[in-house]
Amino acid sequence: MRNPIFNAARALTIWRRLRRRAPFGWADAFTQFHYVLLPTRLQIRVFAAKLPKRAAVRAAGEQFLVEAKEDGIAFYWPTLPGADVSHLLDTLVNGGNPHCYLVPPVRLEPGGRILDVGACEGAFALFCCRRDPTVTAWCFEPNGVMADLIERAAMEQDFGDRIHVIRAGCGQAKGEALFDTRDTAGGVITMEGVGEKVPMIALDDFLRERNIELTPKDLIKIDAEGSDVDVLEGARETISRFGPQIAVTTYHANDHADRAIDLLRELRPDYQLRLRGFSFWTQAPRPVLLLASILHQ
Image 1 (cartoon, rainbow, N blue to C red):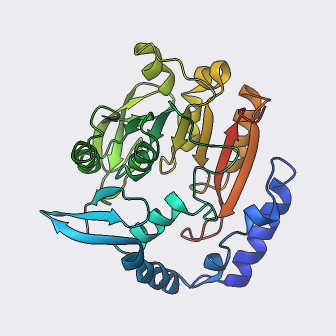
Image 2: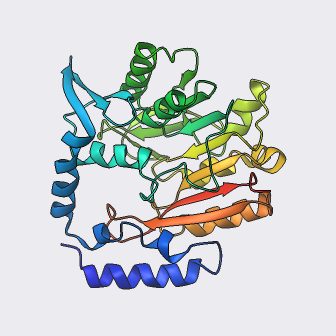
């Protein structure tokens, strides 16, 4: 069982240090902080209990169809949904959730293009496309099971021409990596150990090969299970030249918040940054999300 006093002290120490490096207000840092203090089993029970209020779930072959009640999106999940899917739904519609990507300074812009790196089940791209019919998304997902589910949901909701699935991981450069898919609802990029070989691409190369030039109204959303900073490194040219909006998770490693702040400050000193929250699903709390945008100017 995690020690709530230790977690609170650790979070307070991190907050005091990071607020000197990027905007990290008290309200942002400690939103939903009660979950950090709760035992893991109780967290799971709380979120699982909320799922029936948030979505209807039914079997669809070997997968499960999740139909959200609040925003009307539907997506597939490979196993029986529980607390994890309940929390996922909360991140889409609750701006008070530190994992919510669409809070200032980041916003969904008409005609915006989204690069969804680590798309998993595709709920974020589906949510954005339903919310604005002019939005287009590219979902980067190396897990073949999840990529299939994104395509299935997109086609059934007539988003097939607006949601494009790229079956690859993202990193600093092109190549191959091992992808551990023992967790069928995700996976981890590794350079050694267990896993299947998957193609790796850099966002700069992907965009250059397709003659796509992003703008400040476009969004790069990154939740890459530990490869998040590598994804930013692979988008150096794009970030430096065009200043797209960024929403990148920072809870996968202790140094990710610092490294992401350093890199974005280097590439675009004009970015307005915002850190949010502390993770309650990791062994020890870490900052959840770093947001960046120049649209405020």
